[in-house]
Image (cartoon, rainbow, N blue to C red; front, side, top):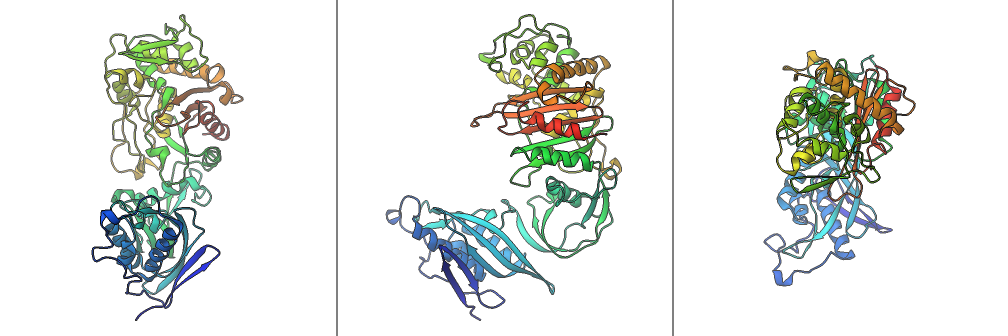
Length: 543
């Protein structure tokens, strides 16, 4: 049966409506060549599509999609195979019917649109509504205006390799509770959305729930779990205890909200329990646990431990701070305005975050290209690849490096990569002398053994605490840590990134039995943006 298709233009926007409850099966336009619309290179137009081409392409693409004619809609994209597969799955796997697509006001080649549809599965139906968009580009070989196909065109929560499906949920829902039994939801704590999704995937069955019927994003990797978009029939949630603190989580959520692309983690050093994890991002990536960025001078905690452990110097030993330091043809400098100090101790250079002091010291015997890697791995548990936190996480990377990277690694540039989880753990290890692998759920829920590391000697730990306390009270971390009392420690970091106008801002600090770390991308110097995030968490948290 042929369905009625109507395209209405009102005030620069248009809606595509399909009559009837099902999908049509015929093509809207038959003006394409037999080879899928290809044209000879000589006839191909150049330059960006004009307003009429954008409008016509958008209308034809959305009309075919609304009718369920995946093949025709795909012809109007620059990736026909992927688009046809995704649009077919939209109908057959996601069970989405009665599709109404309304284009918003077109801005150049950018076409926003809204979706109003119905998801129907085994006699149960529910309305679906969301917003998406696409770009219209010029085909490279055909010159035709085409939709620049990405998975997010179908739904903004989709990434490459992912798909929409409707059916029994892959895992039962969970009722996650904090360490005091308070319920944690993504509505109340938006940063927890990817965390709760991971927890559900990993522990939904173990928590004793029953799956419901849902429209969900199926991830490219089975280990990545799913993301629920719409619940058609509720399952029965199982209660899952976590190590989180609702108070710490609230403080972390509010703190990262002040800067885009920022992440933070708080842990309890005496146990390794994660108290808070927060991200301020446009996507669902849990950068606080899975991110991989150069940590800047916060890495000097590990480097200082290496220098002490290897007998190169001590907190009160020499660590001169010249204006520049050259390592194998690469010259390193300090922050603008940092005066040189030839008589500086390690504690002095640590508190002032002097790069050149650390660069000069990594040349001392008995240090080798692998010394920092060994310190990070054996004493701080970094880069081992064996952390089992309860959800997906990365445990840092501190590779053995030759040439200029050996010096750059020592100041948190080069090839070193950490995330706030790793850095909070580093601070916890420095505080207590013991490495306790961070966990987000009770250890009894986690399959396999937790990661272990040697930790630090009492002497090394005491010197690190001394240096971090000085940094917090009178060094580069003093402004951010002001008013938090004497039982504190901190380290600032700024990481330069190619293509960025401002460096990434890093900060880590502790107060009592709480250690926190944060990064704010393009946030400036360590104490400028990440510092206030950490201070806010420490101020609001008791553990």
